[in-house]
Structures are given as C-alpha cells and as structure tokens.
Image 1 (cartoon, rainbow, N blue to C red):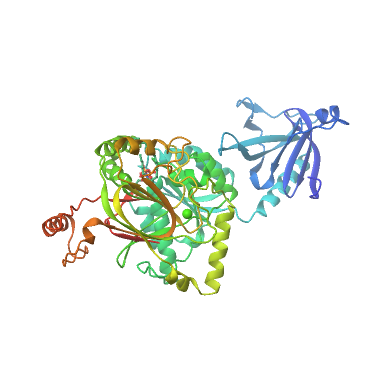
Image 2: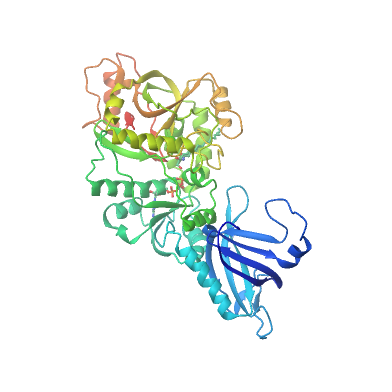
Length: 526
Ligand SMILES: Nc1ncnc2c1ncn2[C@@H]1O[C@H](COP(=O)(O)OP(=O)(O)OP(=O)(O)O)[C@@H](O)[C@H]1O
Ligand SMILES: CCCCCCCCCCCCC/C=C/[C@@H](O)[C@H](CO)NC(=O)CCCCC
Ligand SMILES: [Ca+2]
C-alpha cells in the first residue's frame, strides 16, 4: 500500500463507525480508526489486520453515489438516509466489488462509505471511476446469446435474474439474442453480426451452445482472413473476440474447466473484470473435409454411445446422461480400429505429472513462445515432416481426446486432470477392451482422487495430431469404402455385404465432439 502513491485518503463512516479510507491506483483500503488506535504499538500479524479491509481496484465492479432510498446492506430493509446537517451519514457512495466465497466462486459484495461533505463524496466517486476507466481489458459492449432450451431450460431466467443486473451495475451495454433454433447463434455470428460493435460475445448455455458460438467466431475469422478451413495444412487465425460463458447447460465442462466452477455469478464477474484465458481448439477432418472444432472432449466408444443414446432423451434434461451412462456401461460394447498419433515433443509435461493448468501456467506460456519462435523461423512444416507417427491397433471400449481437463460437476478433476488449456496438445486416452468390473473401476476413478490412468488396460499420450480409422477400413478390399456418395443405411449394408468374407464386422460407434455427434467415424485431428 505504502509503495503506491495515495490518490485519496479520508475519514469516512461505514455502518456508523469511523474508518480511514485510502485509495491508490492498485488498492482501495479502509481501516477502523478506533480498532487501529487500540492496536497502536502492537504488531498485528496475518494477512488482514483487525478492522481493516481492502479490495484491489481491478476487482471493483462499480461505484455509485447512494440515493436517499436504497436498501441497507445489512438489513436488506429500505431506509431513509438521515437529513440532519450534523449527521456524518448524510452523503454516501457504495463500492461494489468481487468477494471470494467457496472454492473458485465469486460474489458481488458491497460497502457503503458515508461522509458529511457532498463534494468529498463526489470526489471519491469520480476518482474511483477514473481508476476503473484505466482498466482497458474490461468489456464495455457485449453480444449475448441465450439458449432457452439448454440444461434445465433455465438459461433466460439465469441471465435475467443473476447476470443482467450485475452487467448493468458495471455499465456494460448488451445486445441480447434469445436463440430460436439450433445453430441460430452460429449462423448469426458467421454471417450477420456486426462484430466491430462488441468487445466480446457471451454464451448463456452449455457446452453445445459454446461450441456453436466458437464455430461462428472461428469460421468468421477464417473467412475474413481468407483461410480455407477444409485444408489441414493452413494455420488458423486466432479470434479477436473473447467468449464469456454463463453456465446454463447439462455438463458445462468448458466453463467448469476454465473458470473453476459452474456458477453464473462467478462467470459474470470474471467477464466484467476482463479476465481471459486462451484455449486450444482441435480441428476435426474427414479426408479433405472439415467437420468440426473441439475444445473439450472428442470421444469414441463409451462417450460417443452415451451421447447417441442421450440425444433421444433430451426432454429429461441433464439426467439423460446418467440414464444413458448406465445403459451404455451395461451394454459394454468395444470397437476395433487404428489410432495413429504424433506425440507432443518439447517440455510440455505429461498427462500423468499431476500438474494442474491455471491461468498463467508455465507449460502453456512455454508452448506459445515455442510456437512463435518456430513460426518466425518458418520451420513448422519441416519439423512436422520429421515427426514419426505412432500406430496402435486394437479393441477399445473408449478412445478419448481431452484438449482440456474436462472437469465438470460429475467429475471434478476431469477426464485428464493434468491436461493444459492452451498448450497446443490434446491428451489421447485409450481404454482397451477389459472386463465390466475393470471398466467400472476406471470410470469411478473419475469421481474420486484415484488415478484413472493407473490400469493395465488404459494408456494416455499427449499428442499434437491424431487419426482414427475403424476396423472395416483396414482390410484388403478393393472396394472404395470412403464415404463419398454412399450414405447412411446404404453405406452400412454395403460394408456388411462386402466384408463378410474377411470377417470384419463393421461395429462402429460415433464420435462425441463437445457433445455433438460427428457424421463420420474415420477422422483426422490436429
Ligand atoms: N433455440 C434453440 N432451440 C433448440 N436448440 C437450440 C436452441 N439454441 C441452441 N440450441 C442447441 O441446443 C443444444 C444444447 O444446448 P446446450 O449446450 O446449451 O445445453 P446442454 O446440451 O443441455 O448442455 P451441455 O452441452 O453442457 O451438456 C446445442 O447443440 C445448441 O445448438
Ligand atoms: C456407470 C458410472 C459412470 C460414472 C462415470 C463418471 C465419469 C464422468 C466423466 C465426465 C466427462 C465429461 C466430459 C465432457 C463432455 C462434454 O463435452 C459433453 C458436452 O457437454 N458432455 C457429454 O458428452 C456428457 C458425458 C456424460 C457422461 C456420463
Ligand atoms: Ca490442451
């Protein structure tokens, strides 16, 4: 506090006790004068001294001059501010700020300072506002998309009751679009939205809704930069706009794994203070065609089957995943195929190193600076040419690629607890065919502290690219089994007919790509 020069220092009242209130460009602090006097001469140890509080300026949400009739902080009742000229409570301003509550959860708290002099009150309000205006990473204008049907169908209610009031308190202007159909937000962002007007886009919904918005923004950015999304060789342009997530879905793993909770108020406060976190995006192709991007889970086998089954039970809301999870577990299907991957090289940690990625994580920082160096040296493609692919054939219960931990309320540490948010890699988890009991043990370890990779039938690799082809594509048939021109039932019956002789049963799952089913099983991912 002493190191920064003071902007203001006054004696003000908080709940009728006199406080010394000081402001510098980093911190607003208030200390109870009587308690401070009592402790004079005695050293007080600990982070917060008795009767003292402080808040970093970057965590102040807003400051407001208090009107006459406003609800009192402690009682919640409406009260008149006393009018007597001698009353030190005559003029007041309220500071709204971030308060940390339970783990990773934030709350908007407030404190009201009373002063007898109106001009002093105005000076405080004005000075704090000036300091807030210097925080340039805060958004002023946001484009909000609400999925009214995500999760328990409470997206609109959550936004209206918990988020809109704090955005308005923070003087953020918003254009709100309640979606009317699937892909409404994606298409609007891709072709129509005037993005220059906004500092960010807000997604009210679950992972599927985030995925829509991310696809809209990424595709729009590539279109404008002339990058062909179908090409696996071209480098994608990063988006200029940030996406804020207000969780209102069934899994909300993208929010949980980045913010640390699935609490709408916490998310709203992070958006207001301008926090940001870069995120890896996988692009998924089939031959020369771009299919989708993925930021959380790309899962074949177990998670693909859970999703396929649960889509028919959407009306159940989030419970559909539990019902389909148990059903899929009991069916115990395995799938044959070949997984090939390029291992991540360099100092990128390992999926089993027990590291947890956090904002400012050293592995992600190192990875992005490595990328800058290789880009400047124009050596990326040369380096990649020298890479050798690892090829694994087998029978799998699940093939999961987790580009982030995929932590969510169902699995608080996630599918790959040490996966990094922005290291340019994904953790490829192969669960080979095993007994039901072993698979159950593996699944249950996602919900407790035990290591889910510590099984003989589970392998995990940190990779920068991978490919998968289901078994039917590997036999020496002359028939072209690529999916061009042959679709759906016809395609499957064609495989069955033509592959009877080689005995390869075309038993296939679907890819679960951030909660959406992919239309192809043979995929290439980078
Ligand atoms: N107005 C709408 N009507 C129907 N579907 C919509 C609408 N708006 C968005 N969608 C689609 O709803 C799907 C599910 O939405 P969302 O991700 O918000 O919830 P969820 O699936 O319950 O949660 P999670 O993805 O976290 O499991 C998304 O794929 C999205 O494309
Ligand atoms: C029989 C006992 C089972 C116990 C299993 C507990 C394991 C839970 C792990 C949860 C991993 C979630 C990964 C995130 C995937 C999201 O991109 C996706 C879209 O929201 N959600 C699902 O596919 C929904 C996936 C839901 C799976 C149940
Ligand atoms: Ca990653």
